[in-house]
Length: 163
Image 1 (cartoon, rainbow, N blue to C red):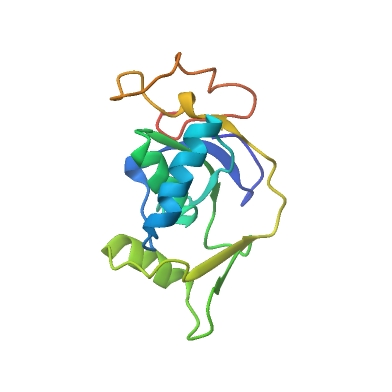
Image 2 (cartoon, rainbow, N blue to C red; image 1 turned 180 degrees about the horizontal axis):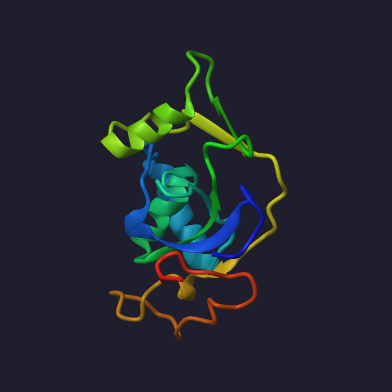
């Protein structure tokens, strides 16, 4: 992960198998994203993930699209979820939802319906478009890429690698 100050978001490539959803996805949205990412050849908007628990805070549909495109990792902004850098509100009026409930749902697999939670961050996140070829392993079925570009470029890190 890229070094930063305490509680600051870090950019990393997170192994998809480590990610934990807390919301269900809508099939039509996933299918549309698959086509959009395939057509562009770029994953334009990193997901948001809670450090340590790997709970997806923003990007459930994008993660599902990456899975269907045979990606093995996702570009992500990783946050200390317990701090006030990340805030949470419901998409629809109703009972308040807590961060603890989001983590509990992700760990238990008792997912919220799609678009139940809405997270915000208190800092600007720079754009980090990533070529799809950098996210799909060479041996992936049906993959057509020329190999990964340098994922260790300036500011990039891989949460799947020690160090």
